[in-house]
Structure formats: structure tokens, C-alpha cells
Image (cartoon, rainbow, N blue to C red; front, side, top):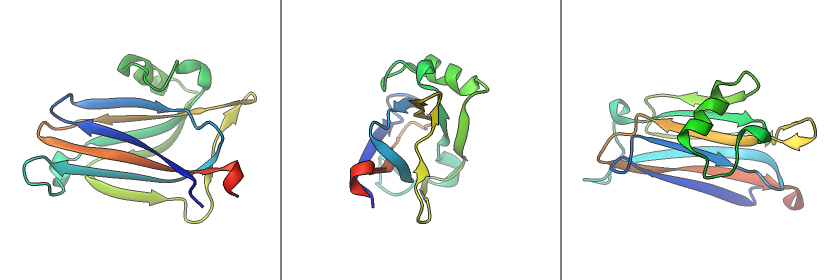
Length: 141
């Protein structure tokens, strides 16, 4: 059961990348990740050649200060060997990845929950879209 979602929007006219962190407070697991990338001119999905690249990973809590972390902080955290890669995509303007019935558990290390970070790069001017994350909470089980 999905109890809540987290949405991160991006706009290619505002920058060519999106770096964000998601603190899964109270979440038992990640149920799905969705991405949609649209052409701002006609509202249609962009082609694969205009789709952004996405990296998702679990990062130790001490490496990320807050959900509005700087691109430099997110990139530095992703470069560390203690991150756990979750998803890498390129050339897919629209996709949906589900857990197929069993939530990907929120990861902890040394008793502290890890933070989910996302880096969208190669966002093209004239496009916009959003990342959506579906979470299962302990209280929803």
C-alpha cells in the first residue's frame, strides 16, 4: 500500500540538472519511482535523445545536510564508496519502476536511516517534468 508520495519537479529553462535529497522519515520502504519529461511547446513526451539521465542512490545521513542540498553536496555524496546505487537510467523520457509487490526497504546504516538522493542531468531547455516517489509507511501496513 502506498501511503504518501514525494514529488520533485524540474524545468530545463531553469537549469540543466536537478540535485535533490529525500529524507524518508517514517517510511518503511520505497514502492515506486516514476519520471515524466515533456516538451513545453507541445506538451508531448520528449524523444529519447532529449530525455535526462537519472541516478538514484541511498546515501549515509551524515553526508547530506537537508533536502535542499547543493548540487556539489549531492555529487560529492554520490562519489563516495558508501553509497548504495538504486537506479540508473538514460534516454528514457517516461518510465515507472515498481517494487513488484515488496517495497524496497528504507536502508539504515549504524542505526541511522540513509537518505535517498536523486540527480537528473542533461535536462534540455524547453522541457520540464517531474520525479514521483511512492512510499509505504509503517502505519499503513
